Amino acid sequence: MKLEGIRVLDLSLFLPGPYLTQVMADHGAEVIKLEPPGGEPVREVGPRQGGHSVWFRNTHRGKRSISLDLKTEAGRAAFFELADTVDVIVEAFRPGVAARLGIAPDVVRARNPRLVWCSISAFGQTGPERDRPAHDLAVEALAGTLSCNLGQDGRPTHPNVPVADVTASLFALSAVLMALLRRERTGRGDTIDIAMFDSALAWLPNATGTLFATGRPPEVKQERQWGGGSFYNIYETKDGRFVVLGGSEHKFVHNLLTDLGRPDLIEAGSAPPGPAHEPVKAFLRETFRRRTRDEWEEWFRGRDVCFAPLLDLKEAFDHPQTAARGMLFRDEEGNLHIGTPIRFAEEPGRPSTRLPALGEHTAEVLAEARALTSRA
View 1: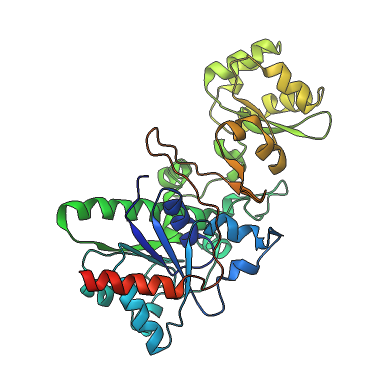
View 2: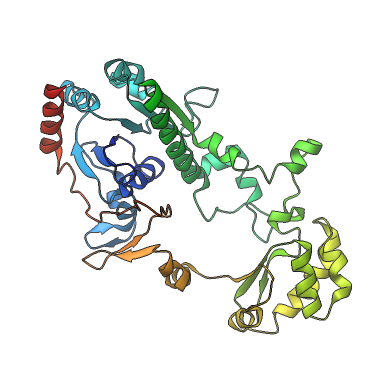
């Protein structure tokens, strides 16, 4: 696998860091999870299956667990022994905490110059908000993305995915891999500063047109990606379910409105998003209420139109496409796992479904570190 031979020490908790290191583990990296004495909090969060929380299983398969108290001299000494032998350290402390513990990245990298140290935090290691405590929702609020996530009443509502968490995780993965690639030429690692705030902002290249061009925030419901266009929208069906039109290119507008007998609406349906689309939206709302969701799925089959039925999560994970892509599988005990989305033609990922008990590998991992150090 692509990351065989890479040793990762994961000090992070909750979602961004653990998901990053699980992706690395799925592709062959040796990931050692350093848990505080109380353990990774998500071990106890949410529904359980097979003796573990589903959240923990979705972020910690294939890792080994050690438990150290970094507030003690013995814990820090053991940490440094291990840090001398790894390629990557991932942490998600609040800014300044690593330094107060005596394990700041410059201290650790002075001992191990090849080390790639990746810090993930809400607002980064610099700036006036660096010390503000926050999880995903609060970060999205300050980054402005939550203001674009409006319900039908026009008020902000909870986002359906943890945008700041996951974007930070993916940017951190990219940064770690870049640093490892560069290390092949220079022999030196690097220190990475990933902010969830920065990551949320960076995922808005298609949503900043109005803002950058006029200096005004967007009027959300008039923007293409948030319902301002008739062909990038959600429609209710006869059975109270929903379908989606997901492509506003002229050819899709032409194809659908022609087949529905309303070529007179093609010009409006191809216009820039905004009030011009209201007649098309009204026609499509009325039309989609004439059939059930599944009847529309059959009607659209073979037509060159961006269309999809709106599935719930169970329907999505049960869908044949999910199975075909290996995005849901069961372990030997029958517990469900989300598959790995990175697919290589050669050396594909091979997720290990084993989950570690808290501190299960502490003695084993520290003995290995001492052996590696003695051979260096």
